[in-house]
Image (cartoon, rainbow over all chains, first blue to last red; front, side):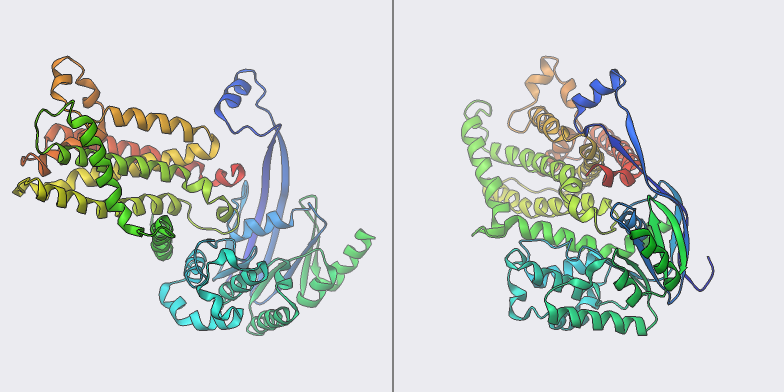
Length: 246
Length: 259
């Protein structure tokens, strides 16, 4: 991988087996195995995906529902292992997806800052140092010592956002998280993300909203049925996408 | 190998946090909290001593210590494996969304149970003191069966967690198997009679019993480890851990498709 490359996706394909009726107990498995009915419908969510993002580039991934966008994000962030192909990344990765997925409901906000932080791979010293900043940014205030199951969903995602962005990442993976919380917090979080842009962070942004992609990204690809159908400059790709969706 | 060590180092703090979470949440909202690790085995010991003391241990004053040693070790094995079995499937929501080395969930579950077990050994110390069990130099060796039991539990835990992802039946099957192991581990009865009537093989194939017997040797009877039991249980532990690690490692990328 070249020095100025942040993400390199080579020949990635992802296959799912859609079993006819989910087999998750032994009896069914044995019966189906013996009767030879253990057949799977293969489904390729991604097919031969190749792209490279250079440091500081912001790539938008466009596509309709079911085109493989979320699968691609999961593959890049390491949650899913591709059936074939490889993904290489350079630097710290901050996936801003499903904020607060690692929260424990019976834990207080304070405890969750440390738990979720450790899930994201932070060190304790780092969290100690950033703790006040995180609480301050989330605007949770005195509720930080209340069990998180009593939080509103907005509070949860605000805290999740604050923890996930406490680190200065090299690569930012964004879903449509820009729409977190109320208007005031949305502006605040957008400012934070924009300030990361200024520092030259690499971005992988997934959306089906052309507007957002045009605002944020400089390059784009279009996914359709698991294939890349177009890639290049965001303006050029946007035109193709417009034609596709109309 | 080096890569996985590096990865472990990176997520060391996560392991610590997960262990802490398991222990903290286990006793949260109960008034006596962590004290239950002490009260619970004590109460079970009292019940078992009352029920079985009358039938089995003719006038043996130290019978409660006999029960307690067996029951503490067995319950670590049982809660440890059961916790590990569920550790992957119960963290499904997290596994689906954030990348974390998945064995961390299994390992943290076993370590937290082991810590709770070590705390509960305080009960044993107290009861042994009250019943005037004299400590001997062999007490130091008591750590050996505990380490072996930890290895067995980890290996079995990894294997069970993998199986549970693909077959949710494991939960129920393992519940029955652990019950079988409990009755075959001489927790509340003496083994001499069974050895005499030719049923001793049950103990010779049961690594959990071997750990319990060795633990009793050092703590209760003031003698050294039984070499045969030590070697056999350690060998079993290493084999099951090798199998567990291998199966877990081979299948872990598929977990997410079945959760």
